[in-house]
Image 1: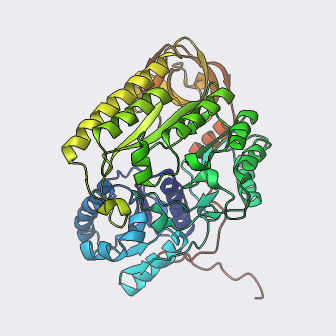
Image 2 (image 1 turned 90 degrees about the horizontal axis):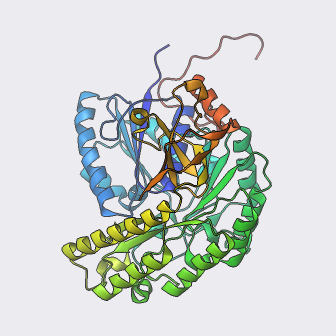
Image 3 (image 1 turned 30 degrees about the horizontal axis):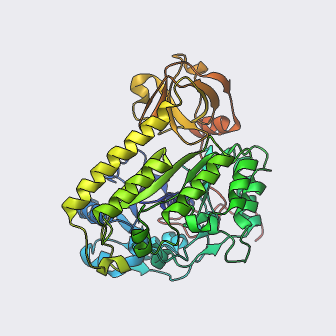
Length: 497
């Protein structure tokens, strides 16, 4: 039998896109393709199907996509059977532009119909014509599709998609639609299934995750969901992203503090510390309310690490506005911040606002902000020197692990920790295993432990990682989707039909 066709998925953007890419991989494997191992993002060479799962939040995502598509045109000229598909937020936004700029693309699909990809690829192959299918409403939650998870011990679970907010800088609501919530029973059933497979860490996903329940009229649904997750045996760590300050209520703080397997970590997007800019962004909170939430979180969970998103150079931002952001950063004591320079996104209200900030001014402010964020984060991290932290080891967290004889993982508060490990492989932690480590020194973005881990616990997640590295990986529940490429021969007849 001929070798199966191969695929490669290139992902840009947020955790929701990463989750969607796992589903895209699961769909393609169920349709008969095999993953092309070892392909870099810039190449994709050698794969029979290359899928770009795109983001539309920032301008550089556009540039990266079209640059890579130009590269793929040369590869396709040398490999005529290659199929190229573009999905995700940019496909939803620029459905016709993509084929005009890159007519060698075979399939364009949107955020609402990920499950259509195998059918569209087969149709494009048979008809030898590009296929565009963009749906305006969600067909099925991503978590209802088969998956090829990247981690055997950690998984994403989507609890909602879409967003009801109207932030003037953001195009996501136009591309993902209004918020749609899954039923709690479906979410918990998926988590229990994942735990049975060895998953011990779950991250709950939503564009506005703590607004969960708005669709079926229960404003306390998210807190109830966190508490319900706390009753699942074998689920060691629960995280969630990203909440919105306007929907962050005390019942969620109480649920976090009362539920031992909900991690003391909060990613709370600030965007700006200037009340005037927050109003122009149409963010329905102000800086004192934001800081008040952080105070209440830390009162309930003193060990909580809080991270954020900040935009610099929003239209109309003055030096005074920027200094207000710097002041909130000092007061908030973030353990990390994802900082962005504002870029115009066509189709958003901010794109046509007056007083666009010059690039040079934005760049200079951005550099000052990054310096302050790093300074604060380093001060916060240095507090851990000499302390013990619990680390769950993971793959892909430490780029220099092999050179330094270390393994890396995440503390309960999600801080990255690089840990010295024994030379004997039999004594080393496996990804998914958990141990106590002593922090010996800190950097702005990670903690280090030069001492060997103690109290190493071999976990079900570590067992799942070991099984996945030694044997075939389960793809997920089959949905009877059409295969792509030549079908397998029918089995020989064994009796009456």
